[in-house]
Length: 345
Image 1 (cartoon, rainbow, N blue to C red):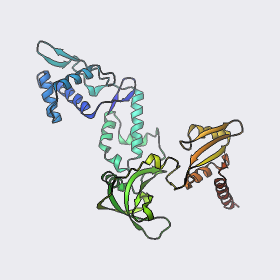
Image 2: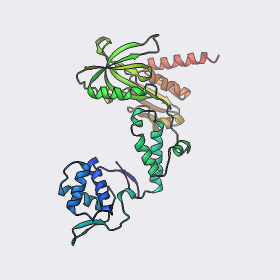
Image 3: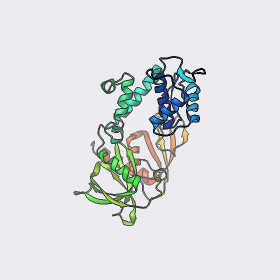
Image 4: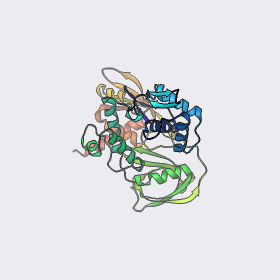
């Protein structure tokens, strides 16, 4: 849950039940139609709302946290009347829902909501659309303002083709269920059917990919399927044994989505000094190391597999980069550059 402090926006390391209890305690203390609550009244009220037995010690600690916890920063003015043994807010207008935020916090949240707006076509975001709108409304923002204000835009596709399959695939991954897909690859005229053990979903270059084992492939190799090429998906009600698939290890040496069986290679690249500044500020890969940085070049090394995404990335830099090693990668990039030149003759 997001809590707004006077100075900054923070994530509160409290569990969901605790946050709910604070809200019910706050509601009971602000209720003018009921007598001021005793500790027993608060316990009864919160237990009923939570549909669970809440202990005396828990409510006492919650009250203390609402008063003093610097992470929550409610600083709730809860006072205890010894004569009546009741609790109340010293400031009757106080509510934990009314914690003020600064303009910088407001702008930060507006940007965050704007980011979510860019992914509005994804089912996982649509599930929380009502919550997003409630937050926006509470801060006197609205959907039209977010869409047209134009303060910040992200290069995201308005629609992710195949995104409608994400909820089913996620459920299949969690439940270890084999799925059946009709897959239309770009080099075939007709879709091919695959029975897939789904392991992982990944987004790259505005496309989502499913990584899993196709039961049709020889040896049961791990295969990557682009969701924009899935034309149909069906459950099979068949299950598979849990696999120790580690996506971080699987993609550790890859740029992009293509992973080959071969070992990673030491790639050495020489960038122009100007382009080198960009490369240093946003590394191409986690393995990137700077070997030389002077007025003539910025030389880096990468420990990666040679795949199409790497080649395309290098070609995108044009004359600002030269492949020093391995030689077969240098030859590949040079050959592609020659073919490009032919298009302009």
